[in-house]
Image (cartoon, rainbow, N blue to C red; front, side, top):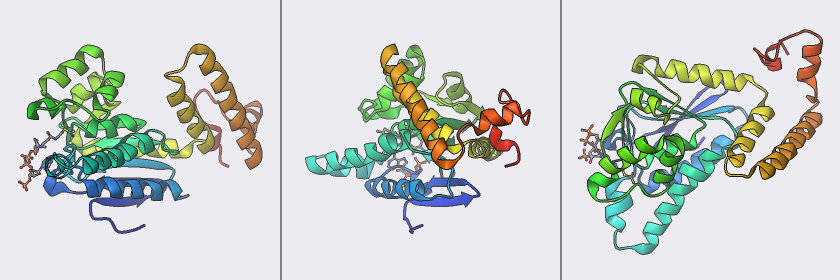
Length: 274
Ligand code: ACO
């Protein structure tokens, strides 16, 4: 892995943790961080040993949103630079992360503001510490939750809560983030890493192709009609079957069930010893 100035990478078995690493600026996303994250995610995608990606921030913050100085203020009058910043930010925060070919978990360990909500929403799962501080602070400095922030909060959170936090700029903690379904779960700070690693290890233990196909299919059908979704899901299911046949895994799960080696209702065939 290359050396990066704004991002750190930690590896533990099949789990790679990418750490937004500008703690002195509360991990605010400046243009360099956006460029580096585009590279880092490409490297992690290419790494065959990585089965699960975790995104977090160097304490005490998860991410304080876009860098108000470097991302906004310094390029206020430079249209081309503003456009480039937005493009490279959107590329990794939304496009690369949302459809990342491996499971992703946001580990929200502290401040999480504005543009950081897109990272949380793009990850497949999000766990927060009870004392994490969330805020759609744009309105507090005379802006609106742009990029894709309004879109992702409107998708994930109940309408009343999303609009309330977007229009008031008020903060809320990890427990409340779990209540409004911005994150899956909120746990005491001391347990956050342990819980994230338990989920990551569970995901890493499952059939890789099935997990990937489930994610790809699920995220695409959300905006489809019933007919489109039906035919798309049938095609994805056929593609998965074909992929399994190529790797010699086709039918393995059902065969092991019929041989009474495991019960798929409560466990995975990947955990039967092979
Ligand atoms: N952009 C640029 N610099 C930032 C940002 C940011 N988003 N957030 C924090 N910093 C910098 C501060 O300017 C300060 O720098 P300095 O030490 O050189 O003066 C340093 O990080 C530490 O910040 P403090 O405010 O001293 O830290 P504190 O822990 O007291 O507060 C908090 C943290 C609440 C995150 C506060 O810094 C803050 O309100 N930041 C702005 C959050 C925000 O509104 N982000 C924009 C969201 S909108 C969007 O992303 C599109």
